[in-house]
Length: 271
Image (tube, rainbow, N blue to C red):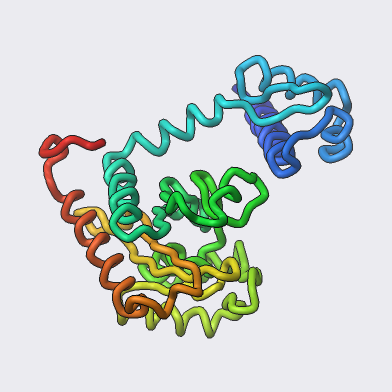
């Protein structure tokens, strides 16, 4: 295959990915909207759409194209293929059940975190927002900037400073709330405190009304698996010793997960 053919293939893939990304961001898009967005000929865009639809990656509802469930198929495979991720899912469920609070597990992906497991208290007043694709609340597949969540800050603190700088160069420090850290010096000071105490804290830094504690979880070889976090509404932050108990609980859950990771793969069932 010639270099020109390779470049053409890459360009075609880039266009398909841009099309999919736009459809997801808009929660559906028409052919004419995609033509305008991509600046391509109508026939070219239609070919991309038809190909993706024929393979189940898009579905057409009326005049709009939407993301298809084929992506869910691949996403579930990516989440379940690693034993560590499956163990993390069990830890998240156990942590939420034990505390009646929200818990999640995130991994770093291309400089941001993506939620791969989450568990919410069934009596949450805002739980219905989880089924709103525009909601700020976490659900599986949600991407976050790393500087404004407990799990993300725990992972940043576990990374070399050069890697943190590279992440900030690419993604910046966008402000989510008035509590979000938006300058590098302050962030690196926070990461230093995180390393000293062993856990990260996010105090209404991503969304108002929610505070969280997070820890980095490592594989037996020392590499980072992901970040485990527990969140509570701010009105409960001062109750029942949250300031002292939440870090202890999350640190303990993180240690238990690391111990499970160190056990032989066939030593216990994963449910």
